[in-house]
Structure formats: structure tokens, C-alpha cells
Length: 273
Ligand SMILES: [Zn+2]
Image (tube, rainbow, N blue to C red; front, side, top):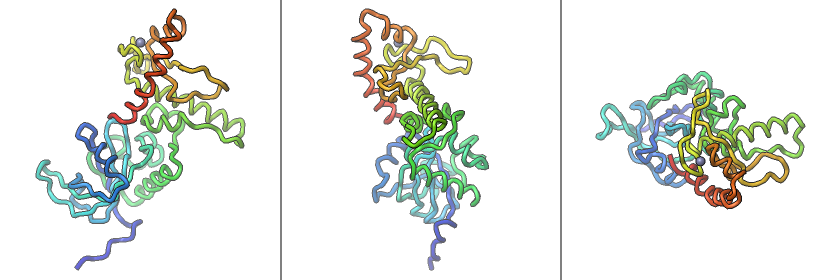
């Protein structure tokens, strides 16, 4: 006889790893929000039908989707010592939650310091993870402090870069939002450029004391109101190309070519790895 599944707040929650190169991330994006199930996803042997799964996508993407275990885990034929269970109700977390945000909000989750393939956190930690995901889904805005911005993922940076103070905000709040958005734009562009000039594609000429490839951010359009720029209008350039955009004989047409190139760069950063 089948026993009744436990109520949602008593269900176990498992965090499982997913890849990018193997197509996991694309697969999740394809099935999310549809009544499709995923066959034999890696899951703990102990998982029960109805348990929640949070899928972490490697390569800096973070907590990417949630799902529910649909079938009892069975040994996988293609992967020794691993079990697989079918998943249903796949839903994306947008933007995905970076490890930086996870560590800040769920400090007791040791897994976040060194993510391995599977973990089943304690109930107390699970409550915190659920709250974090719930809040991200509700607001769509990463709850990240200034010092965590460099560790945010590219989708979080994009969202933070678009933050604007509300008209009722105090001067202090306005200054804070401006600072977060400006830092996020710069980090977003450098993340997108991956150490190469986005114009000539040459590798950054040197590394900064932090070990980061040195590139400059260039605003392709003049700021109308001196507010933070839009991440889709800023490009990461090597110092030569940056000078060219401002000082060369062909500065105007060079800058126009950058403006034409930007939509492709933005799209590629969203859809690849
Ligand atoms: Zn260049």
C-alpha cells in the first residue's frame, strides 16, 4: 500500500549538480514550465517520490532550477555508483542564484564552499534555501551586498546593472543603488568579455593585482542624465581600442561598429555556457 506523501514543508530537499557541456542546462531551459518530465536525472539513492530537487549548474551559473522527484531512484546504467530519478515540474530560478548569494544567505550550508554532486541539507537549512529561492522568484532581484558583486553570476549582474532608485528613495538609498548598478555594469561587461577585447578580440594586455585580465569599459553612447548606463551599451575594450574609440581619425565609425556589434555580444553571454 502506498503511504501518503508528507506535506510540502516536511519533504526532503536535495541539491544536485548539472553540467553545461553535456547539455543539462539547455535541457532544463527547454522543459521548464512545461508538463514534461526529465528522464533519469542524477539523484540520491535515498530520495523519495515528491521530494524537491534544486539543480545547481556548474561554471558559475548557480542554483538554476527546481523540480520534483517523479520516480524512485534506480542505478544508472551509464554512470557507476550513481542513481537516477525522473524529474517533473521543472521551474527555472531567474536570475539563477550564485554561490556568493547562497553563502551570504545560507551561511550554514557547507556544500556552498565546495559544491559536489549531491547534498541533502538538514531541515533548518532547507527552510533558508526555500526562503532564498522564494524571494528571488518574487522580486527577481539578487539580494547581494557590494562586496559580493564580483562573485555574482552574469544574469545577476545584468539584473543589478538595471537597478534604479525609486522616485521616493532617500538620497542615501539613491547613492547606494547607483553604486551597485555601476559596479554591476563593470563586472557584467568584464564577465562577458572573458579576458578578451570585445572589439579586436586580443587577450587583455596584462593582469591586475587581483589576477583579473585588464580591460577598460567603454560607454558607446553619451549619458543623457549622468545616471548609470545600460549594460547593453557598454563594451569591454583593450587600451588601444579604447583610445581608438575616442581619439582616432575613424573614432566615429569605429564606435558605430561597436554599437552594431553589442547586441550579438549580449545575446551570446545570455545563451552560451
Ligand atoms: Zn582591442
